[in-house]
Amino acid sequence: AFFSDNRGQVRKDLMPDLVHPNAAGHRLLASCLETALLQLERSPRQERATIPIPRENAQAVALHHMLVKEAEQSQPLPAGRFRLVLIGDSTTEMLRGTLFCVPAPTCQGVQEVLKETLGAQWPAPVVLGVAADETQHVLWRLAHGALPKALEAAKDVLFSLLIGGGNLENSEHLPQETHSGILEVVLTLLSRTRGRLLVNALLPHAESLSKRARSANRDLFSSVQQQLDQVNAMLFESVTSLKLLFPGRLVFVNCGGVLLDSRMQVRKDLMPEPMQPSAAGHRLLARCMEPALLRLERGA
Image (cartoon, rainbow, N blue to C red; front, top):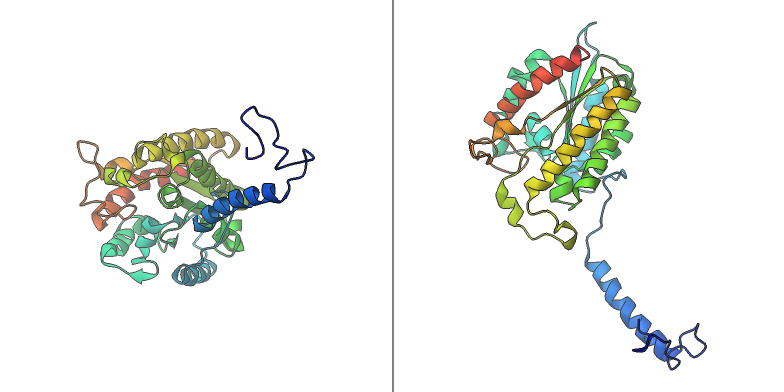
C-alpha cells in the first residue's frame, strides 16, 4: 500500500523500476515491519490444539514423570476385570488429591470420593491428570510414556477422557479447533490401544468467565459457556460417527448437568472454581459416569 498513489499506480519515487524499492521505499517497508514484529514479540506463543507440545512448567514436568512411572507400574488385573484409566486436566488431577502436584484445599475429600465411587467398581484406577493441560499437552504425554506398552496392548482397559476446557479459556482456541484437538486425542487412544474409551463432554463454566476480555477472533461467541456448548455438540456428532468405525469401543457422556441449579447456573458449592469441582461435585460426576462406563465395559 505504501508504494501506490491515490490512483492505485506504483509510486516511482519509491520504486523507480516498478520492482525494487529504493532507499525511501525500504525505509517505509522497515517501518511497517517493525510495528508488526513488535506486536509479534508481545504476543504469547500460540500453541495449536492438534500438535503435540510439552509443558515447560517445572511442576507439570515433575508430575508427568510421576504419572509415567505410575502407568508403567500398574499391575495387570485378574481375567475379566477392567482397569480404569482417567485422562484429563485439573478436574482429573484433583482425583489424586493435588493441583499442580501439590495438595490443595480445593482437593479436600476428592481422593476419597474416587475410592468410594469409581474406585470401588474399578479398583486401583490410574489417574493421568495434570492441571492446566490442554489437548496438545495430552497428545505429547501420550507419545512420551503416559501410554506404556502394557496399557496399549490390554483389551480390558476403560479410558475416560475429559480435556479441552483449557484450550478455550487459556489458549483462546475457537470451538472448532478445540473440538479438533479433543478428536485427535480420541483417535490417538483408539488407534494406539485395544481398550475402550469414554469421551466426557466439557463441564460447564460459571457465566462470570464470559466477562473476561476476549480477543477479536472470539467475538462470534458471547460467553465461554456458548463455546463449551458448541464443542460438546460437535463432539457428540463426532463420537456418534466414530462408533461405526470402532464398534463397542466408544461412548459419549455429558455429566455437566449435575453441576447446575434449576436456573441452569453452575452451583458454587459443586464447582467453586472453573474446572475444579468440589468433593460433592466430583461425587455427582462419578455417579453420572459410572453407568456410562458400565455400558462401555459391556461393549455397548
